[in-house]
Amino acid sequence: MANAKKKTAQAADAQASQGGLLTEEQIRAMSEDEYMNDAQLAFFRQRLLEQRAEVLEREREIRERLNHRESAADPVDRAATEEERWLDLRLRDRESKLLRKIDSALESIRHKEYGYCEQTGEPIGIPRLLARPTATLCIDAKDTTEQIQAQYRD
Image (cartoon, rainbow, N blue to C red):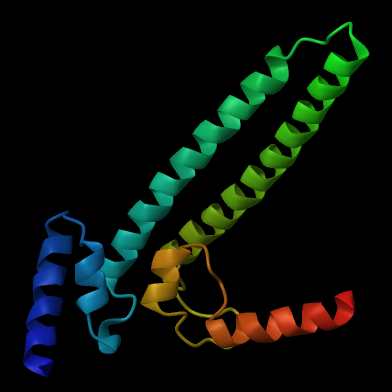
């Protein structure tokens, strides 16, 4: 079994060195010893760049809607227009925050710090990063943070 994982890792490194990116299945199949090797970093970098392009496109669409929305004479129509504007502003804010997280993740890849918990230094884990590439906390640290936040909300 260990020999098969070693061959998978060698094949992954060869593929990455040739400019080819790994698949999600290949990333999942890699051993813990190879956590955040160059091939994995390249995979997540590409995934984040794709996500960044999508966010920028959504931001552009929101900006267009905000700039081209006409004001209505009817009070009911005006209220609906203002509601749509408010929702677009909230969406724009969310997209901006996500863009900052993506840029931060890309920066951590450049410094080879990506994939490690900001609080504990432990690996965040491939499954979590595949689900949420901008994650900066491992599950345990995230749970602790959420529990503390819940205490202050109550």
